[in-house]
Length: 418
Image 1 (cartoon, helix red, strand yellow):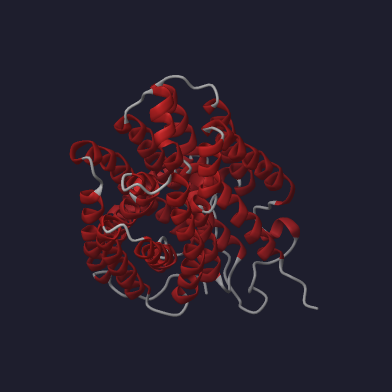
Image 2: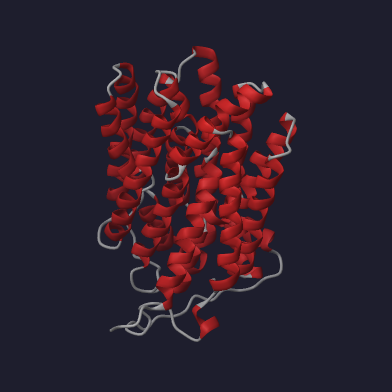
């Protein structure tokens, strides 16, 4: 029997860790109504704290990539999960709006930054030569699946017990992940005397990571390098719309949108969780496809189909059709973050494997700016119109624009070490 390469063990640990971080960050959608009811805070204020979380976890990405290069992958994973655990612990004693913003905006935003932005790229680049696209697909699938899969359980806890019981569940999960990372995670294959998966069969130049002492300078320098390149702007612009149309809008406001049509909380959360199951399938397949097909055309179709599905959603809800809502959940779930593997692939092709993690970190920052804009403006649109319809219609239109952005990217020879 052939021995399993340890790279797949690292992949599994990272997969579970990303899922837990995703659960923590995305659980915000469950708590909008409970926080409104118990504390009397208005929806724009609550939406602002969750928008700040999305914004900060995106903008922390490139800095996290630099910190990983300086301090090591395992250590940064421990630091980040610790911040998440502490933030969840503080949630039990918060009383004021500024505490909500500090905890759910700043602490959970920064704490989730490593896991939900550059970690998948870092692990795939360090531990895989062959099947790198597949590895990225699996790990990025975990990002959205983690953000969705436990939502029905958390919603049930909120409905049958209290929001504090739901917080207690994800707090325990964060402590369990700290133990798992401390015991089994490794930063590099050489730490245990092996080579990356596939290097036995393929001669490959190992990327040279220069450990400078100023990670902030490293991150800012990479941003200025990217700003000079047209492809960076096109990828960042399309990813801005990606964030706007997924975690920012669907992740934050989908449950409340469903509730406004009389759909029960647990049912709405189950639909979102249902998307997570199909996201796992869709994004893994996308990773497999990104190893084999032109990543630009993959993105073109992903954004186009997502735009059509978002334009369809308000009419499905208005007609009160559970069947159509299930169809939307399946279709949208397959496309939730299928955009990530080909976006990472294009970033790696343009900037090379050495710079790809940090460059992708900045592109992800644009993603989270879009997410933050949608999370906050969704609350404003609801307050003005007493409906989310225009938020979802606008997001669908933006996705169609993103499909045009990616097709403008010039096809070029890969700079990957393959």
